[in-house]
Length: 128
Image 1 (cartoon, rainbow, N blue to C red):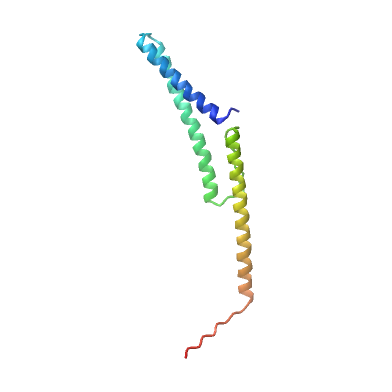
Image 2: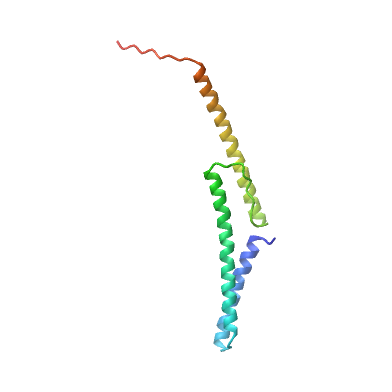
């Protein structure tokens, strides 16, 4: 699988080269070449849009997991890129840490709740 940066750069380069070729063909009045250049620009643009939507879908999944406190999920990068893999690993570590802190807090809450249920406390108020 290609890296995310290479994929995006190659698509942008394809759009730029197709646009340059389109202007050259229109200037030189070459008949069918502008049509093919327009199709190439459209293809690269649509594919770049789908790549972006894949990233958005991935981050929505991560945000939904955080919102529902589904911290068991392991975050994986949709691209085999070093930076994206490191970001996914850091996010997974942060989720594990958050899950650990929430578990510790829940244990403390249950301890204090059981302590309050077992110990009768009375408050004596005297008003003179």
